[in-house]
Amino acid sequence: MNVSDRKFIFHDLQKIEGYIDPPDALVFTVLLQAQQKRSLSGGVAEIGVFYGRSYFLLRKVVGDEGKVLAVDLFDLEAADGGASRQYENFLDNGKRLNMTVDEELVIKGDSTQLDADRVLEKIGRVRFFSIDGGHMLHHVLSDSKLAMDVLADHGIIVFDDTFNPQWPEVTVGVADFLRAKGDRFSAFCMTKYKTYVCRREYHDIYENIVNHAPELAAFDHVETEFLGARVTRLHNPMRRRMMYELMVRSGLTNFSERIYR
Image 1 (cartoon, rainbow, N blue to C red):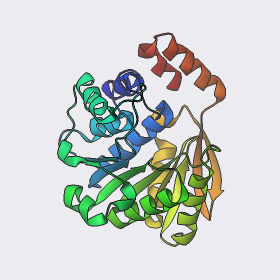
Image 2: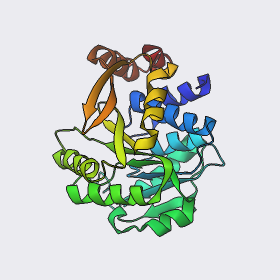
Image 3: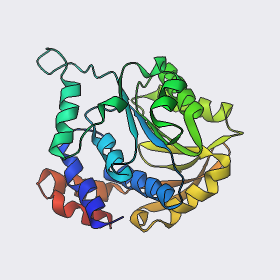
Image 4: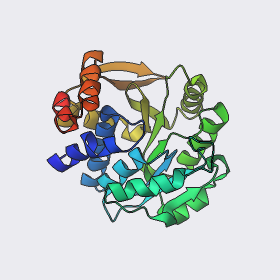
């Protein structure tokens, strides 16, 4: 990870409304770059785009030649109650970052109605699939099945809000998926907001990448177990989170990345 990557995460992305925070942005980048270094190829997919913060991170990491599929209803109501401008704002955010959106790889619609063939037709087998769509149980089960059906052998599925008490059915859905598919899939990393899952034969590879990445050394690495798999939990102390938020709100985004060294 170079200086440009860190600037993008800690400064440029903060211009875009969204929820992915620096710890997970760092994990995304570490895992994607590790895949690229090992020639573990494939497309990248995201369900739940919002205004594009994590989408543009994915685009930045995979480069112009990489394929990133974006799936969202794009129907968020405007603040004044008028017609939704979510999609237009998403495109505008790309312009702000000097990044174009490949609209051929944007699906406006309900992910639970999306079939695997359409995903495969657009980007082929998927090496990294981020799920942050609907947060009810049927959404999570449907999206996880879709991800499983299009995943490359070395692919990673990322579940958002796994243990967020505001969305308890996400926790149930992820647990149901891992219990039902535990002979093939296991979690290998957890953060405050996300759970990272892969096929069991790649578990040790990805866990080792997380444990030895210099970019993640600032976090406490806590070994735990989740549904029969050893998992590295990356703990980000409250003190650091508060310092980071204070610097961002004070307009010091250019210096905020130093907190995570």
